Length: 126
Picture 1 (cartoon, rainbow, N blue to C red):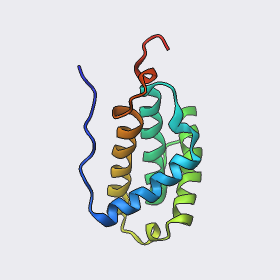
Picture 2: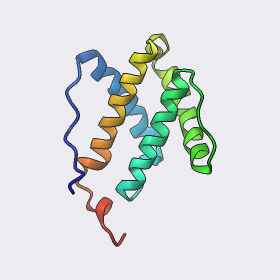
Picture 3: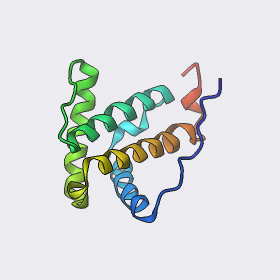
């Protein structure tokens, strides 16, 4: 079964600009994006981005497992930096924050995993 996904749908200009600001922070400051296997990257993207979304929306965050706590630690820092660097984020309604973070998640999955030309990501012997 082919798990390759296509590039996410185009966004309106405002959303694309906001997403670019969040992506810029991640690309310049977050080492978790560089895991060497696609499944590691997918787990990290899901864990950290979902917890960041929960923090930004003031929702409870599950920290029940060591992996949850690891993702939570990265999410806390990222949420704080997003709010500091992007003051417009704190003024957005929760549903818009969730939609933006979902778009960011899809975009990162595409550029870091599904659209990547890095063959090491899918090497079964690595």
